[in-house]
Structures are given as structure tokens and as C-alpha cells.
Length: 362
Image (spheres, rainbow, N blue to C red):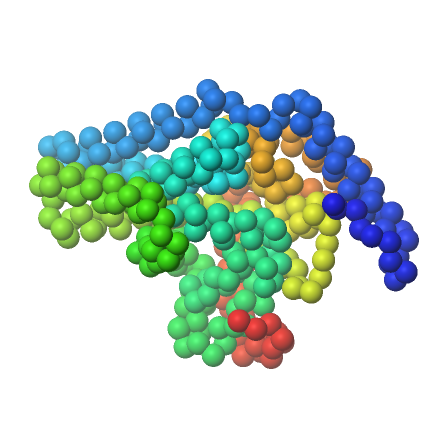
């Protein structure tokens, strides 16, 4: 129910604007439903799984070969496969992969467990909160990124009394891809996700993650690798996969303005004011798993993501008809904007920020 209720304090023009926006959104949604846009394409689903399994076969095959020159290539392929798994588990988490909620959840848990060593249930619990209010302080958990990163001034202010934050934030833009993304992956694999699985007694996900360790152990054993070499290979794949996943996710929101915790906006305005799209290109579409159409994804998260490449002009038209901005940038422009933002936040005087945002509590 997106239409706002009558209120004696409401501005009549604003009430009418929001009602028109709600009507436009619902009209477009019904059009997409009637066109079958919410239905899955099973050929596309099979392709995505075949791609991942092929990357696993090639990567592990190279590691088991006698050609040591192939090892670095193998680790890069396996790292990229973790990123591809991330796109699939993300879509399955939205129940837009096969269209069957139960199947999608199991596929998500299996792929995220064996492919990344992580928990799909934990991901959903966090990611759903992000979708409910992207870039909204105290609501969007993706903003709570200290001590390793601060994407905006309000969050950076929380690190004013942390010696580590005062040391780390000035260099956060330089450390993000090579170090921070890897550390986050390790933290998820060995702390946050195992604890969540244990507390929630998620036996299936525990088995899926155990299968990952079995596969890695067998490859290490039959490939003649030492424990240190296996650990190094794990770290390299985490660096590649972490940079791929987290680096790509970063471009869509982090450099956009945040919304105060006590302010409320229309559902569509989270897409227009706090989200950007990355310009359409076949390589970009593949690399980002169609999540370069982030505006469409936030407005219609249950639509299979490959559909966004076709429907985005109609969403843009709806925005224009309602006087909303539709922010589209090139991939490298968005990446540059993201890192410039990180560097600008890192150079802020944290003590001054703490005084400015003293009402923003942890």
C-alpha cells in the first residue's frame, strides 16, 4: 500500500505527487506481470549453472595438472567463479531464479555454501533489510561497515574514537580492493556465517560448506600441495572473488546521499535518489550479472534480472513522467566516483564529524 494517507498536515501538492507516482508504479508493475516478466527462463538458469560448473572444472583441473604455470590462472578462474556464484545466489535469494521459492532457497544455500563457503540464510537476513530502505541510516545494514570502510560522513563519524579507524580510513580507498574485500570474505567465511549457521541450526548449509572444504582438501591432497600452499590459494581466490563481488556492488549506492533515519520517502524514490544504473553493454551486463540495472532491481526485485536489459527504458520513462532523476553512468565513471568518495571520506576530520553527527549512535 504505497499511497500515503490523508493528513491535515500534508501538503496537498505533495500528496497528489506521491499518489500519481504510486499509480504510475503500479500501472507499470501490472504491465510487466501481464507480459510475463516475472516468469523465469529455464534456459537462462541452466546456462548460469553450466558456466559456474565449467569454471570449477577448468580451475581445479589446472591445479591438478603438472603445469605449475597454470596455477595462477586457475586461482583467478576460481576467484571469478565465486563472483559468478554470488550473482546466482543473490538472484535465488530474491526468488527470481526458478520462480519457486523453496527451490530457489535451496539452490542459494547449496551454491553459496559450496561455491563461497557462506550462508544464504544469513545473506537474506541482511540483504532484505538493505532492500527495504537503501542508504537509510539505522535501517540499511550495508551502511554499517566500520571498522574497515566508511562510505559516508555519518558512518565515518562513528570511528572518531577508534585508533584503528583513524589510521585506516585515510587509506581505505587504496586498501579496499586488494585487502578489505578479502578480509570481509574471510570474516564472513570463518566468523559471521558459521556463527549464524550454528545459532540457527542450519544443517543443510553446514553440509554445503563442509563439501567445499572436502573438495579443496582433496585437490590439495592429490595435487601435492602443502597446507601453506592451500591457504595461499584460498587467500588469492578470496582476493579475486571478494574484489569482484564487493567491488561491483559498491558502484550502485555507496557514493549516493544517505537518508536520515527519521525521514521517509516513496518506494520509487529510493531508486531515483539513492541508486544508480551502469550503462548497458554486453560485457557490463555479463560482468555484473545484470545488476548494473540496479534501479530496476530495487523497484522490481522479483523480476528475473536478465529482464532488466529490456525493461529499463520503460522505467526511465516512468521516472521522467514523474519528475524523478534516472541516474545512469558508465562503468568506469561509476567506479571512479566510488573511489573518489572513499578517498574524500577518508580525508575528513573525524573529530569534527563526530561533533557534527553526535546524534548518530552506533
